[in-house]
Image (tube, rainbow, N blue to C red):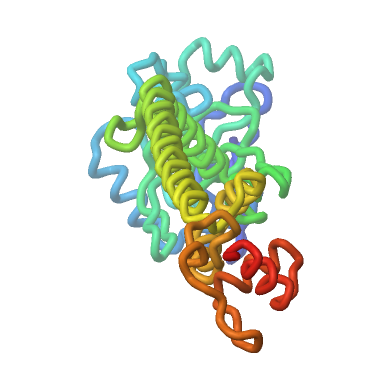
Length: 327
């Protein structure tokens, strides 16, 4: 390739087009100081002599491969054959040029236009972005400088905002690695959740059969307790009713009524209060058999008044009846 005129201060980083026979001299890094990639990423080439000096100090040719296999395949133990070797470099007006010794296969591919570009791989300082050394070069058909200084184009990532939101990533995310990491985190969380569901901790969960058995025992105990309370309450009511009948406080005809009343809420207390105020009904033993009625105007006793009310008699009628029986 013929010697090129030095590039301006702000140069466009590019891959060398290889047309026709394989070029003996190839441009590797354009003159700077600013070098901008096709994707907008930028570097600084303001010390070309230092780049040449670093190459000379190695005393080892710089490999030319296919599609940067030295950077991608070799670290994984895969083959990365050489397409040629750069045995010396020069600073030509700020641009770095290299002398290429091609293999027969690579030279034939370039002549047949199977490969048309050569892209460099270089190291640079992350803070200053200054290019400091060449590490390799590769035959490629998709050229563009990248962050790792592989002069090879990387397709931009365009993802759905809905997918990014679901993954908890910013809408501006274009890095596939971030997306893959988020998906792997979700898969890990899902696996953990499934494991917990299938093998719950025994200190927090019990088998369903044991739970049902415990629930049944509790229900049975509650029913038995309720039955005992009902039986005790019925016995108390029966005792009160029988005593009231014995004391003639209620009649046999009203037994069912008072029993039902006692079974209502607060019924027992109400029935006890009734018994303390109720007078004995007709039929209870009294002193009338031996007591003579007093004068015509004398007031009747409480028992005598109860008899009058039960028989529908006036005090006078009661006194007259008692007097006749006495005679």
